[in-house]
Length: 137
Image 1 (tube, one colour):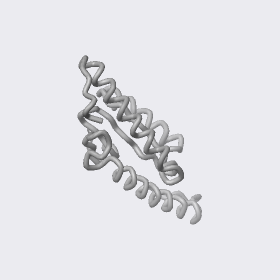
Image 2: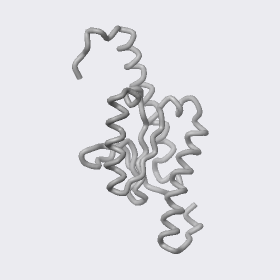
Image 3: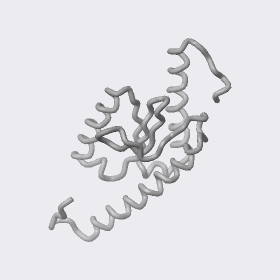
Image 4: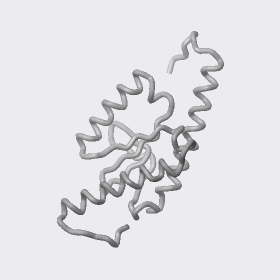
């Protein structure tokens, strides 16, 4: 990305801080969902769904979890995310976007959102298959 002369040192440092915070946020979420820790569902980290790479993906349930840093809230970032989400939805994926700062500010609430997202997908899968599998929880 080309540097703008109008960017101050403070804004550059803020961007660096956001990237570091985002990385920490990603690691926190990965700790929650890795090794089938959440409803025994397998998630992959940095999973390619061409032409994109998603932060976390449960292929079996067709779920994507994205951790959004500051660049996602710019007009360009918002537009890019909308295009990306429509593409992923067209492939049957559901996308949960979580601002990185929320993970650091209120981890239990975010963990609950993730669990509800996964549980809802499991419930839809059970309804569509006509059976129930209470042992998976």
